[in-house]
Amino acid sequence: MSASPPRRTKFPVRLDRFAGVASAGARPDLLRPQRPVATAHADAARTLLPSGLGLDSAGVRARMVDRLRAAGITDPKVLEAMAAVPRHLFVDAALVTQAYEDTSLPIGHGQTISKPSVVARMIELLFGAAGARHRGGLGKVLEIGTGCGYQAAVLARLGRHVTSVERLGALHEKARERLAPVRADNLRLVYGDGTLGHAPNAPYDSIVAAAGGTELPQAWFDQLAIGGRLVSPVQEPGGTRQVLAVVDRTENGYDRSTCEVVQFVPLKSGRVR
Image (cartoon, rainbow, N blue to C red; front, side, top):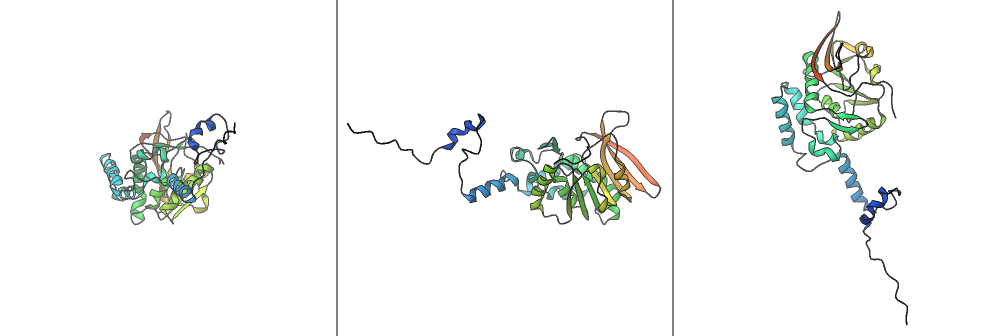
């Protein structure tokens, strides 16, 4: 009796059948299927620049701006900048369908992208002092806490020059990638300790922080120009809530007031790789 012919494997092999192997502890790269280079590049682009679902439409951003206006944001310059910056470019792909909702979203490393209404409100507060002196703009801006880069992109449309400081190395690099398509030539990203501000570019006409501590760092006061304004979350004196603090520097010192209750991530010193 003749021997049976050897069994042949049919190609292409369905590697997705073995997806569970990686979760069982095997190296995840061993069963990764090969893809054409063009496909890999397209997938990488989608990871950085989520699209589809009408997210690239100006109409989607216009509806977000309508909601901001209904929430009390009135400065036309702020609304115009919010309408121009595509927020979905700064949101992870898994959450991209929520990009234009008025909600904060996680961006990794224990940080969040702020609600559009909060971004708009804080920038509108900055305009209360700086706008009249700088031809409708914010002048030279310092942002503390770049995060994913969304607020920096909005600020770049309103300030003469923006310096944005981020203490988390991974987020600093992420922001560079997310901001690349925006092409903001007047924006500089700095990997550093935000509690120290950024003295080389001081003084600043506008300073805005995206994290709050128990008090405002002295470096921010020192780097604020006379006639400039600082807006930052800070713990309410004698309480546990965070409020927005507004500080104006005058010829005679500093005038400080507080606005509404907010909730930001804690302000921390140092740098983290």
